[in-house]
Amino acid sequence: MTPSELYDHVAAHLPDGELDAARVTRHVLTALAARLTPAEGAELGTELPEELGHILAAAHGTGRLDRDELIEHMAEALDLDDTDAEETLTAVLAGIREYLEPVMPIEQMLALLPPDLARLMS
Image (cartoon, rainbow, N blue to C red; front, side):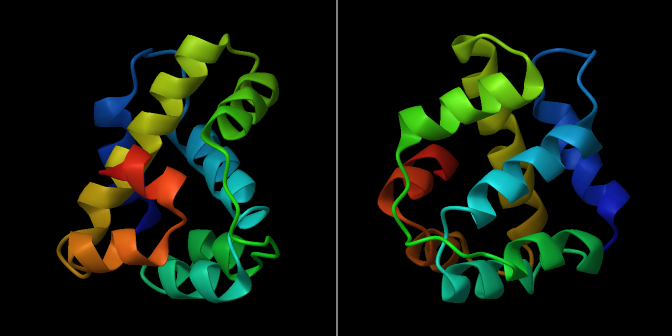
């Protein structure tokens, strides 16, 4: 699968037509890489297109993910209010989930992730 296919999945969920699916997807993946452990990032990243998978492969976090902190980070990075940032984050995660479901069962995907992220993705 290609990055454009993933971006199409994300775009279908974005609440605002003015947001660029590629840009917000890269922002979300970069924010996740800062929070996921190297093992979590590597396993999830192997299922994404190479140019996006390498973002998660560089994960260097502790596996601790605070939902509100992630939303605030997204709001600041994308110049959105918290409500729009949460909708955007949820849209990207929904797009990633749809993209990965044919190659990775949702249960496996959720088991890889910290609980706060798994809840956002389910």
